[in-house]
Length: 129
Image (cartoon, rainbow, N blue to C red; front, side, top):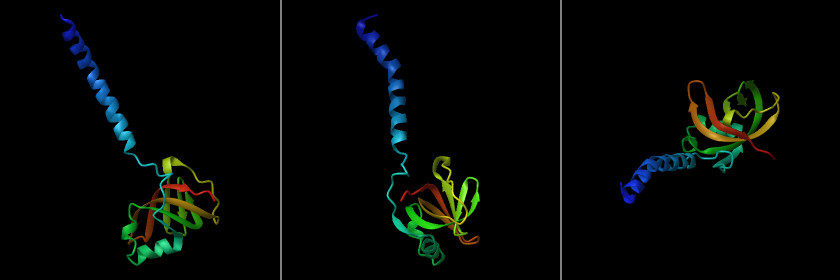
């Protein structure tokens, strides 16, 4: 076997490994970092919910929003703000809040349910003042 044939066999066996590493790196870079993403809208919880009730919130779907509201219910791992905004934490990050506390959060607005009159936020993180 010649040296060129031997080099080709080595290259051919290493090529799938190189392709796999490149694929994993590429797919990891596609994930957005929601903790550092800037909010599209900064408002309070009542105003945000009102926008969806009046059908003015369609442009906010799949956008980051920052809201301030009152914690009205805790349902592990969900935090419910102003009785109508259901927040799902980012990477199972748990908010240690008491019912009745005021909180500032940001999250990805994923949808509004007309029937139940609930707004859902995903990838929610607490904003430190």
